[in-house]
Every structure is written in structure tokens, then in C-alpha cells.
Length: 157
Image (cartoon, rainbow, N blue to C red; front, side):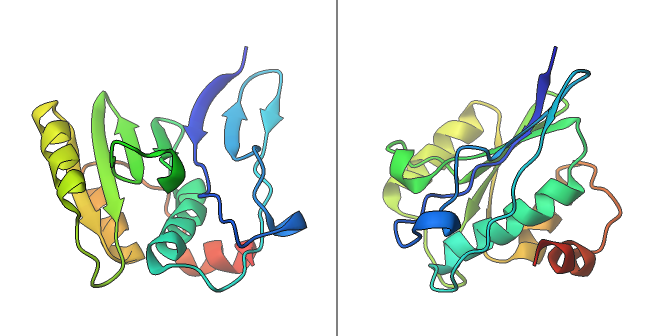
């Protein structure tokens, strides 16, 4: 019986067509009988900064997270509640990460969602860069594998 250990979904990008378009195979499932792996997709460079940050973080977390952490992304198009883009669950605790451009600001609905999540017991942080996002994840106590980012991005290219 397979169990879901990590789920990371790329944001759909309407600018991508054909083989560059991410599919529905963005879930990593490991089990005794079968393993589904994620196909790496090359993306065009004209992304919004927050989407680019999410793609970088998706690639990094696939290599860095251990099976004890469940991670998922909330695509903008399917996010009427203004939830943070990324949620990580480890040891019964939840860390929500909102990914913003370097000078991006939270909207009023996003701030309200963050207040509600904190009231429910989640930790909510905002990250504007890959190192800042990884620092929040480490600061929350989520163990990461000892792999260099340089080697991760070199193998993903």
C-alpha cells in the first residue's frame, strides 16, 4: 500500500504550452510496491517573481525534505481564501509560507487568512527569497537533508 509522503504542485502557468506545461504528475508517492517520481519540467524565464521563487523552492524542497514532512502548494487560481502558497506539516505542526516578490505586500484578505491560521495554531511566515524561505523552514524545526543548493539546481537544469 503506497502512502503519500510529499506533495508539491507547480503553479499552472497559462504562458506555457505543449511539453513545457506541467502535468498532474507533480505528486511524489512512495510505498512498498510502487514509486511515482516527478518529471522535471523546463520553464520559460518570463515568470512573476513570486512564481519564480515558488518554482525554485519546489525544486529545492524535493531534494531537501525528509519523508517525515508533508508539503503542498496552493495554486493562485484555486485559492479564493487567500491561503499562503506553501504549507509544510511536520510532527503534527503546520508551517504556512507566503511567497512574495522582494517588494511585494500582503493584501488585506491575505492578512486576514494569516490571522485565522495563527488562531488555529499554524505558524505563518512570509518569505521573499529562497534563503529566507529555507531559514523559516529550519527555524520551525523541520529537518532538511544535507545537500547543497548548487548541486540541487545543477542536477535540475
